[in-house]
Image (cartoon, rainbow, N blue to C red; front, side, top):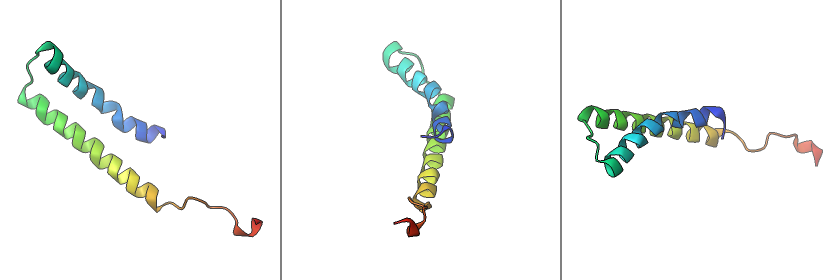
Length: 68
């Protein structure tokens, strides 16, 4: 995984911290936090989907076929 792909997931830890606080500590979750979390998840999903699509278009081997 390259740095570009890894940087997509840097936005997930705050959202996971909100969910963990809600589940284990009983913290309140406000609608703004939920909408922000949905935006984060959609952004990661869309970005990751476009990277996978772009990587499928690249040929796996770009060598010289005369070297056999």
